[in-house]
Amino acid sequence: MAKNSTNSPAPEAGADNAASESTPKVGKGTPTPSRAAQEAARKRPLVPDDRKEAAKQARAKQTEARERARVGMAMGDDKYLPARDRGPQKKFVRDYVDARFSIGEILIPVMFLVIVLTLIPSYEVQTIGIFALWGFFLGAKPRATALARRIQTLGDERLADMDASGIAMQLVFLTAPGVQVFDASTAVALARDVNDELIQHVRDHPDRYAALATIAPQDPAAAVKEMQRAVGMGFKGVVINSHTQGEYLDEAKYWPIFEAAQALDVPVYIHPNTPPNDMIKPFMARGLDGAVFGFAVETGLHALRLVVSGVFDKFPRLQIGLGHLGEGLPFWLFRIDFMHGASVRSGRYASQPKLARKASEYLRENFFYTTSGMAWTPPIRYVQDVMGMDRLLYAMDYPYQFVPEEVNVTDELRISYEDLKAFYQTNAERVFKL
Image (cartoon, rainbow, N blue to C red):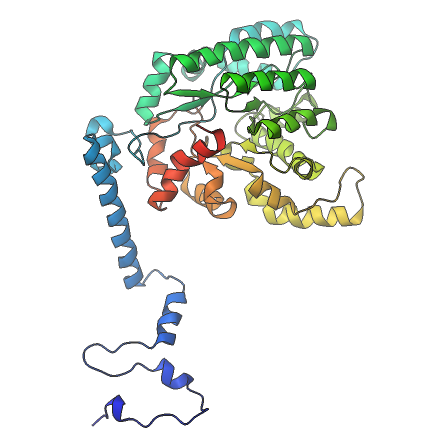
């Protein structure tokens, strides 16, 4: 007959007690694991057949779903319920995480599309990619005609599209090519006109729209003045449609723009552009010049040039926005750090200054990212895990990639209630001071 543990002799003083600590004590009912065994079990990696852990996660998910349902019922509207619990008419409406407000998207339209397309041919500065891209969008294909219609309005159709997608507010701005294809004086004048027009739409629908201002990098001093004027009118930052006639913002002559952005405490959003003429031909040979790949290569290059130029050592509080989950850069962090560090140490390039931190640290701390055009759970979760929950914002690539049901993907992200609220709402409120 087994002896009760209370009658067992005590271990000798100084003896190794590891075996006795890892052995369950015997008492009434189910044996209780020792503290060491419990700690070991807690640290054990989750495996598919770990039924206890799976059950725990399922209970936590049910609790979260009930909380969302409680919020929805309190508001008397089923659009705040999980997708599976909504009525048919709410099929594509996103679950608002706090029952009041959710930031919509970051990529939006051209306000003076006709002006841009009319003026570009009269200038010697030609951008091959823009002509190819907008040549398609002005064609007769259904997708092209729908885009050309949607991108020129902030009226009823856009608001209806937002409602259909469950988007409470959009951050709107002038899309590529913006004013950056013109000579300096024309670009400065157009930027001012665009901003005056856009802010009026925001004032007409203050609960549905916020905006980023357009500036003309061709004249950095004028760009700074327009940025200051625009922020004073209520703009939440500025947009720059990547390269300006083949030049990038890492060149020191453009740094007054970053100095002003830091002083005004507003972000600079770098929106994609088609690759410049000296880069684009290999892309166009196989139709890869636009959003399919060319945008990411060109804009990712721009962002990485900023990092390695030392601009963030000069302006440490500067915040830069990138769409499309960071144009691929978050997936290259390890290799960027390794190879850039090796290159700097070798002294191979005089144009590569020694940075105060690793390149990846700037990408984590001086950039924020959106999901625009990337409604796919694995890379979304990767960017959240690697760059931080506070660095990723929801966005739909409207109107280029308008798919109302894509919000179902992000509704079902397996993240906490608080993280989902940050993703849809509070990250954007913090970045853009909404």
